[in-house]
Image 1 (cartoon, rainbow, N blue to C red):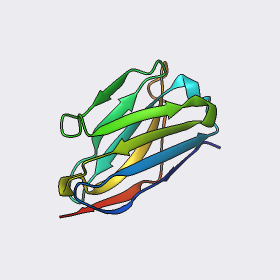
Image 2: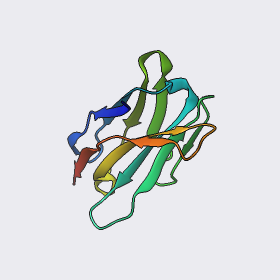
Image 3: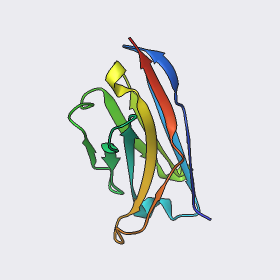
Image 4: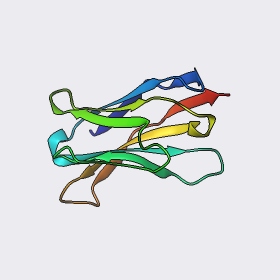
Length: 118
């Protein structure tokens, strides 16, 4: 059974850092593009960062220069290093695995809460 398990969320002061982790099981990890999304209460779910199987990355303008996505295929894990956090980064962060060839095959983690205090 496919499972994406996230960790690393929590409460941090503005200007601080957190590292989120998402470990996948039940998929051939290296065949998947991995992404991080976030959703604040009453808001839509937005893409934060994505990394392809080849290591290419893309970021939302709001996090560019502050967040870094990376992956370790040997550990079936994708990371999101978040630096210089702002209160507007407060949201539930979700990990997504999307097959690089079969785009309709995708899986989601349970989400982890990130709260940034002012």
